[in-house]
Length: 573
Image 1 (cartoon, rainbow, N blue to C red):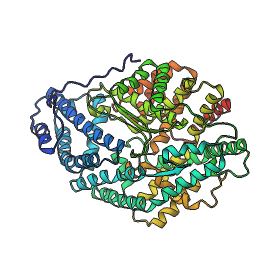
Image 2: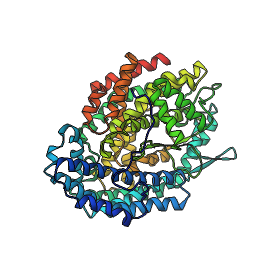
Image 3: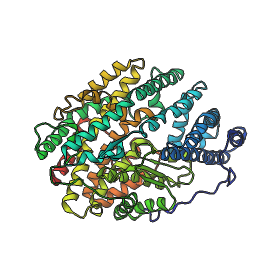
Image 4: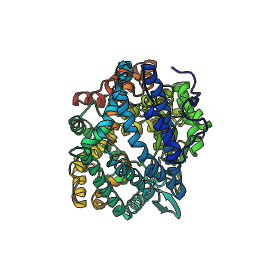
């Protein structure tokens, strides 16, 4: 275990210490230097790699800050323009150089002398990038990056009026936990109606994204964008068929548990019909969980939770607070959602979220905090590329932290019954998230296998897949119009296509680590820390092995994990 999260921005050896990115003309000489430099020994090559890594870190952090600032204030046009300038004017000029540098590395006779175990996954990724690169895709990819951010601009402006006050949709969702069923229904309908106001704008945006993504894939010689994206995402260790097996396993082994959970909620609420505005509600007389009041309180309680798990974990969040790397509370003019954004050069990441005093905010905070811990653990790896770990292990970092942290949630809840309810909600969420993951993933496969589909066909297919992974317990009668467009709330479809199955794969890993934790806390935390510290230096199966986990999609394994969660849930009901 590490003792301190004290983090230091490394001294620059290639770029001037005070250098900042203003335009391409100032940046290009460093790319030109790397491209033209002679490499006459393996030592020269390793020095060249470190210089390239330094440049990559500076560029990545500059882009990250532009995106962070824009999402924190979507109404500030200058921040939006700064991000768009980087994506449209600087990044497209970097990409041809990046391809040339990749080819130079692969062609060097000294590359064969690099330690194979240390550089295997990095060189595999480099060769993949060479395979995908096409000059004609540069402007298309730049355009797609800017267009994807329009989802946040549209969604971030959505507000509803409740009892004379204006709320963002994130803030309004807290009313869905209220014991007053009439209020819940009113708020639910207002939120859905507000979403419908922008359904055409989001449909048109998505149609354009699909068309351009399909063109990128065809330009690169792929049959469809799905096949292209699997290569781009570095899915070397599983296939689309594995994803289909995952969908089937969820349907067989998880959906029946979701039906049981919903039936229990219906019974607890004493309802004849269980409507969508009832799923987060409490029975009459029981107030919704309210674990904190302000973003500052959320942070300090999260630091305390993390510190009790491991002082290093708490130190990570405290260091981020000192460095100004947090924006936690929901407000108008802020993009929706939450993320942990790694900052490649300085090391300490940035956590962005929309807290509104709900239990789900605690889950989001510890989730993103898990990502942050991994950013700290990988900061001292030798190359920037080594810190670019697969998302399937990154999400284990976050989802396992959700489950580990439950034992310390008495920091959020003085009342034992509130603590029990919080754990119950978390374990229910651990189960019910699987069908939604399968729904979104299966929908994406269809979308990009059929890129010329009409909006009507998209709507019909979405409903077909949604029904496939839904239980009959929830009564949606009279609300069909809302269901047709419910896919539009999923940020990933717009901004990070095909990035969603990772949550399902990682949830399996997180449950596996939690099983370890229940047997031996110290062993589980050591396995967790060891696997995360490896960054992207090992293959995905090797990273899972380092965590003491199986990289396994089989129905039998998923059933074993679901039986364990079900057993743990029964202990707290």
